[in-house]
Image 1 (cartoon, one colour):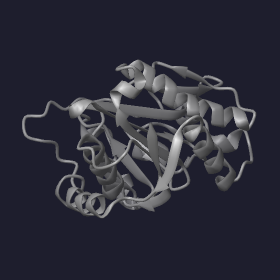
Image 2: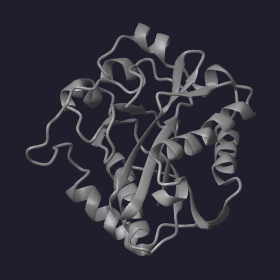
Image 3: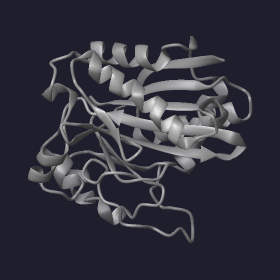
Image 4: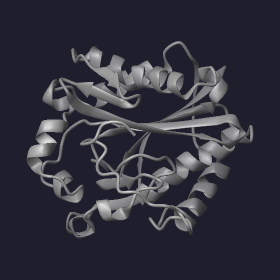
Length: 253
């Protein structure tokens, strides 16, 4: 199977979520090949789960620190995205993973585990989607098995921790963040470029990969989705919202 690799680029929070959505549609409709995408965030941002209550987030703190907030298409808890952290998405037919979401999580998260190992960091996968180092969370991941048999998973690898903004934005104490969360830089002084190269190598290992770009259709569709869907955190009518808390503090989805 041929895969498309989209190299790392920074976008706004609404555009990042809209691009993942647009790629899903392209893959589902057979316009594009299964895709691995790396991306960053133009501003520090928070993404909240598809059914998460926005009251979990301190919006006054977000405004004070110029932090954007976006609602993901995937479920789970709120994630703080520092501009220096790494984010990925993998979009492919679920049959690639033996029609198993558990297999998909295991295979994709192993790419992050192998990257950490490249820098001498021992980690493990817990609760299906948490990557843990010394009992602390370094990576959160979320997925959606969407219509037409296409699977989408995206997640993050923490490069450094913003102890000023993350705690107050996610409504938790700095002590709790220090107790529950860790980062790549706390174990290795690896540069951003080397970390990215390792991630890219591990995500593409044993795959037939062609470097590509977003199609004109995907860019236009993403711009439409960013304005119409991802520029607001208001959920669809009659959506049952749940208080879920912060991804890095709570384990599991």
